[in-house]
Length: 133
Image (cartoon, rainbow, N blue to C red; front, side, top):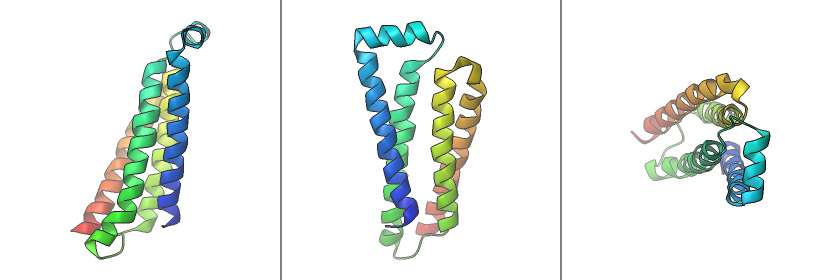
């Protein structure tokens, strides 16, 4: 596997552990009450959902796609540099989104992370599309 594929898979799993941990904290009444009391305005459930969906699901899907689709197509990935750029955009965008959900004063990170996440997805889809066409 390429280093970029491995990065996608490892960071995806790390985000999954964080999402599961946050989900556990939100499931326990004592820690849920503490989180909402100590961080008023934080959107913990949305942070949990995005850790799991954008952090885990999307990262794992792209990691697997970057490994498998070129093999299915019988040709090399269109651009390893695009894949590497996509990884860094996606990893940092997810972190920015999570911080934006948890820290209301950093809401600009939620907006910027969302836009960056979309840009990363478009870059990844273009790279894979050009690989399999």
